[in-house]
Amino acid sequence: MARVLLALAAGPGFPEGSPEHRYEIELMLDAAGRPDGRAWAADPTPWRAQRIVPDAPPTQGDVQHDPDHGWTIRFYGATPESPDAPESSLEFGAEPVRPGEYVTVTEPDGQAYAYRVVGIT
Image (cartoon, rainbow, N blue to C red; front, side):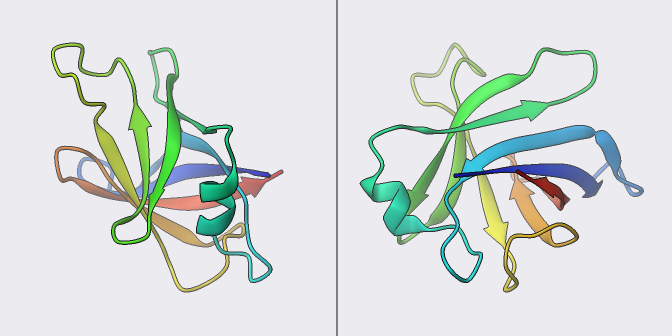
């Protein structure tokens, strides 16, 4: 299991990015360095995720995969009035997940942000 750290590179309101806005996600990577949907489906333990923003506690969530819709992160408790956990979609580029590569995160409100992989442990 890899712990992937993403830092905001650019997006609405952040043309220069913001290293204080981050995601930390757990992923199993396949031999090509891409997120492994088969490993996710076979793993009974949720793959953890968290969103980190300034002046707020981290928001806890989990990574989800759907072969038809791709990768998402669910954040429970983010909207207590809704029974469904809002999801942020993750779009990985063609390259392996490694430092320097980018991931597009689309928030539940439809805003898309570019995040740069800044670390993998």
